Amino acid sequence: MSPFLAEFVQLLLNGVMAGAILAVPALGLTAMFAVLRFPNFALASHATAGAFAGYVANVSFGLPLIPSLVFAFFFAGLLGLVSDEVVLKPFRAMGAITTAIGSIALTIAIENLIRFVFANELRGYDLPIARDMIVGGVRIGPQQMQNLAISVVIMGLVFAFLTFTRMGKAMRAVADNPMLADIKGINADTVARIVSFGGMGLAGLGGMLIGLDTSIDPLTGFRAMLSVFAAAVVGGLGSLPGAIVGALVVGIGEELCLLVLSPSYRSAVGFLAILLVLVLRPRGILGQRAY
Amino acid sequence: MSVLSVSGLVAGYSAADEILKQVDFDLAAGEIACIIGPNGAGKSTLLKAIAGLIRSSKGSITLNGEPIGGRAPREITRLGLAYVPQEHNVFPSMSIVENLEMGGYVEPGRVASRMDNVMQRFPVLQRKRRQAARTLSGGERQILAMGMALMVEPKVLLLDEPSAGLSPVAAHRLFEDIRAINREGVAIALVEQNASDALDISDRAYILVDGRNHRTGVASQIANDAEIRRVFLGG
Ligand SMILES: Nc1ncnc2c1ncn2[C@@H]1O[C@H](COP(=O)(O)OP(=O)(O)O)[C@@H](O)[C@H]1O
Ligand SMILES: [Mg+2]
Image (cartoon, rainbow over all chains, first blue to last red; front, side, top):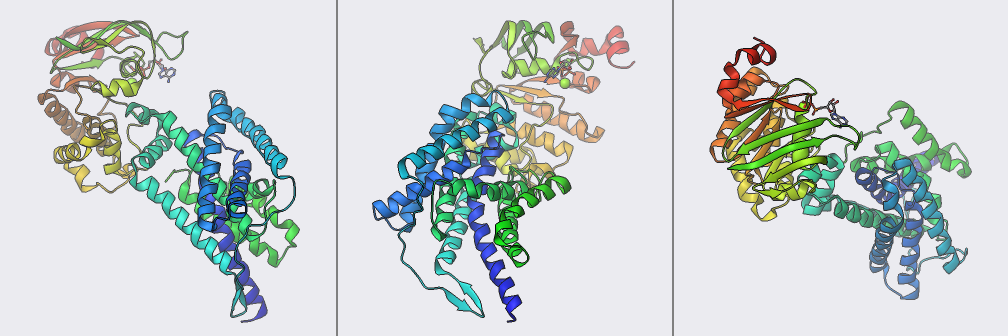
């Protein structure tokens, strides 16, 4: 392979892996939007909280990767359930904008709580170090491949939940037509609680998956936020398949831009993607159909 | 004996506005009563008030003698009243099977057998069972909405303009279906623009004008009343 082609393939591969990880919190964000109808910026701190919960499970308690991820999911999910019930739910009657602003305040509060407990230092997970494979000039990390596989399994579980379970279908019904769901006897409060739990649980998983590659600190979730929002908006905020497509577009775009731009401009891709989609196709690539 | 009884109802979309100024409505077991009247008279508002979607400020609503005013829509559904809204009456991104499941959400144990019944009654739903509801034609969508309502085996069915937007043939078929459902013992309150067809299949008729009862009577008499023909039935 020519060096340029090898670099291109390398970045494409990195982009797919980054996009798959990004899809996990983007699914959470878009699911919460589909049901609760406001952009929940508290996703950032819940991603960080999940990353730290996974860190405690993995480093302090010595649990292996998968149980640590499960712990991250449940911790961030429960935090999401409680914070929504206590903080955001009262805002919802005042409209989406007010609730979104409330979610920013909430995320700053949680982030500082995490900083208070863990301080600002960088922390890494305790994982077996595996050597990268090199295939035709392209470097493939076993840890990244594992993250990709985990992300794909999580996406599969999310869609299985929505397709095959009573609660998953009820959630789609509320996203489709809340008034009719009410008439049919679906309890909107229960659905709101489940989506807050599941959505923030996915955010927590996303935070830990992002941290697995590098390290975590109290700003882990905040830094990922722009890309996660870009993914959800590009695919159509509120559309679950859209979140996956959007995450791949943003993940690959962020990597491929390295061909022509220095890494410090990387976050411009997220902005640019949001801008382009809002100008050209405001409802996102797949529209705002939930499912 | 009335299964559904509304008396002196005053209701609107906010505390201030009174869309329904004073409405009485009775539905006897096993009958079809149609509610007709000009656009904006408050026909849909009356059904929404009965189904629990808007609050009434005065008056009473009873279902089988039990007061249901002020209850949540899902509680009213559980008591055996099914309401099919005029618009947005299906879940567009869900399949027909899933829509029917959601129709029977409050009684999950009965979903399978009732779905069989509904699909036997409406073969088009069987044929398109895996298709998303948004892909259905207007007539098929109305059928699905009605099928969803039947998933709770209601004693009372409220239908808001089920024939709106349908071709005359499709509308005719729909009215036959409505009559067939009624013959199985379901009392039906039917709001219709298509007044003469509605009167044809109804036992009793209510004419609503500007939020008040204008005329009430036996459907066949209302249909033959000269003044009513001139004002409401276009000749
Ligand atoms: N969601 C709503 N909010 C406020 N006013 C409404 C709403 N829906 C209907 N109205 C008003 O209530 C009145 C009666 O409407 P409706 O009951 O839909 O009439 P009908 O079904 O007889 O044509 C109309 O003046 C209409 O503008
Ligand atoms: Mg109407």
